[in-house]
Image (cartoon, rainbow over the protein chains, first blue to last red):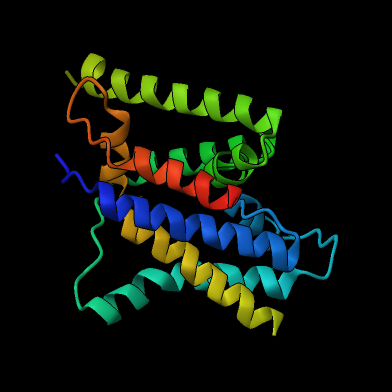
Length: 142
Length: 55
């Protein structure tokens, strides 16, 4: 069970949205985390490597900065099953490349731009996510 | 300059994930677990994401 935090979640959502809007205005770039991280690897089709790297550094440093400011550790509950985590990470990587975007690219930016492709993608991955959790927690794990 | 702006935007995005609770996989899984320990916190956050964009 996790605590119900509607206000904090709304505030956090607005921060994410604001970041995505400003990135669009400043760079003309979609704040798709998988895409930005994936393009840190070759081939380099543009000269945007430093700015992408800066965004990823900021992203990774954010929880550390939050801890420094608030003094409280950031809640994290991660599976200790390493092979499972590797398999899951690979699935996320392949899925976001073949699907042309991840939760942030399609779900945050795509839906807000009313992109049909992103609506389809988001509907599919959210549905599959709900089904996967149901099967894992209540069919297999139940 | 561009480097610093992107660094700041990455920090803002990451801080948003932490504040909203999406940085904790347990919370995300509970949002997806309608039949069990459902935590609806993340639905307002996803709508806030969308609204701030439309502004």
